[in-house]
Length: 303
Length: 122
Image (cartoon, each protein chain N blue to C red):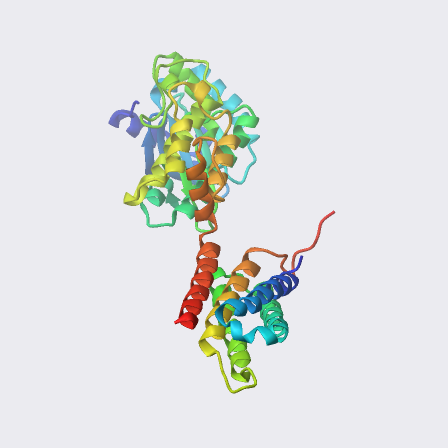
C-alpha cells in the first residue's frame, strides 16, 4: 500500500487546477478517499457541469505502460454495463504522466456502515446478493475486481447497490508485477497475498466471503451457523475448496434465506427436522395451538 | 389456485375435521353429528373465502392471521349462539378452536395460493 506524498499532492493539485487547454477538464474539489491504488477526489466536470469522482493512480503505477494499460482496461470497464457497477466516464493521463480515471460520483452509505447498522440481517443479505450479481457479471466478462471490500460498495438513497473500482481491477497486475501486493488484508485471498499471478474468480469469492462474514456478524450479532459455514467455505485457504462462482455462493445465501439446506453445511436428520420446523414455525404454532385447545376442551368435558 | 379458492377448500376441510372432533369432546351430540359437521364445514368455507379475499388484497402475514382469527371467532360465535336446540350453548368449545382454525386459514392463504393480480404464464 502506498500513499501520495505532500509534494506529489501539491503537484497534482496544480496539474488538476490547470486550464482546460492543458487537457484537464476536471476541477478538484476535495479528497474523498485514499487507498493502495491512489487517491479519490470529488471533482467538477467543467464541460458537463456535474460532480464526478476522480481517481489518480498511485505513483508506483505512473508509467507510460500503465497509461496505455489504463486506456485498455477502461475499455473493458466501459463494457461492464450493469446496474450494480459504477460506470467509468473518462480516462486520461495528467501532464506529469500519472494516469487518472473519472467515474460517477456515488453518494450513499458504505457497506461497512450498513454492516454495523441495526438493519435486519435479511436486508443486509439482499444487498450482499446484489454485490454477488455484479461480481458474477464482471467475472463472466473476464474482469476480476481483486479489491472487493465493504468500503468499495455503496448503497444509494433509492436502494441501489453499486460496486466501485472495477475499472482498474486489472491495473493491479502492474503493481503486483512490480512486487507490490495490492488488496486489503482480511479480504484478499491467500494466493493474492502471496503475490501469485494466476488469480481467478475465486480470489474475489474469498473477498465476498469476508464481506458476508462482516455483514452477518456486524452490529454485535452472532452469525447464524449456516451463514458462518457459507462464509467459511467462500474463504477457504485452498481456492479449490471455495465456491466456483459468485452465482453458486449467492445460491447458497438464497437457500439460507428460504430456510433451505445450504451446500456449505451438511445436515443430519435432527438438524434437518429442526430447520424444517423453524421454516414452518408459524404454521406449527397455529396447528399446535389448535390441537392443544382441543385437548383442553376434551379434558374439561371429561371432568 | 386462487387464494379465495384455496381458502374455501382448506376452510371446508378443516371445518369437517373440526365438526368431527365434537365426537371426542361431547359424545352426547353423536345423533346430531351430521348437522354439526355440515354447519362446521359451512363455517369453515365462509371463513376461508373471506380470508382468501382479504389475502388477495392484503399482503401481510400477521394481519392475515389476525383477520382469520377474528372472522373465525365471529362465525364461531354465531354458531355457538344458535345452540343445540335444547338450550345448551357451547361457546368456549366452539369459539376457541373456531378462531384458531380461522387463524390457520389466514396464515395459509397468505403463504399459498395465487394472488388476483398474478397471471399464468405459458
